[in-house]
Image (cartoon, rainbow, N blue to C red):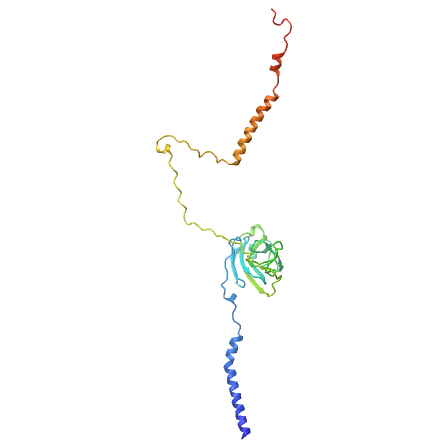
Length: 289
């Protein structure tokens, strides 16, 4: 009897454990299933700027896909923090082979918030595409961003970074041909933010004050009507005279000094012929008849 009761208890415990495992299965699967990253939900960027001021902002992991023309300068900007190592990968789909006339050289440059060019530790920064190549790949892996650094060192610091894509050598006939550009910025974080003992007060982000675009021309104030136009007589206007400045004052003083020097020099260097004739003794019998 006792053995039978023990077997019954063991069977009940096994059934309960199996039921618990089956019920907990989906929950465990939900916990361990990978969640989509934030970069996968970002919309692709389809534009690029033509200068530092008009650079298009891109987030790390956000895809960039756009159509451009060979010979154009393309600018993007992204933000980096201390301890992060950024990797930039660009693929340029070249124009059809039939429309090209030779090889082309490309370059990707990265600048920090103070427009200082940053060095690349890895990647093809200045590749050359052969005349028959269909595409060219560029890459640049930056140094790890530091929390602080000496002003003269030029080390990467937290703030805004600018990416510039340009073609450096290209046959003149190929300028303006259509091309496709794909770029992605990868970021790898690290807890090691050496050197310690300092902290950057503010990120290196150069302020950009965009101006306002006027949709219509400002009204021009009508010029005041002169007395001559009114018919009351003739009036004198000083508008034709230039504005007096320090240059005009020095010019006038120099002219006066030159005139005085000229008069004094003439009086000192003139020939004393008339004075010599006045005191010259007359010969004997000159006044005699």
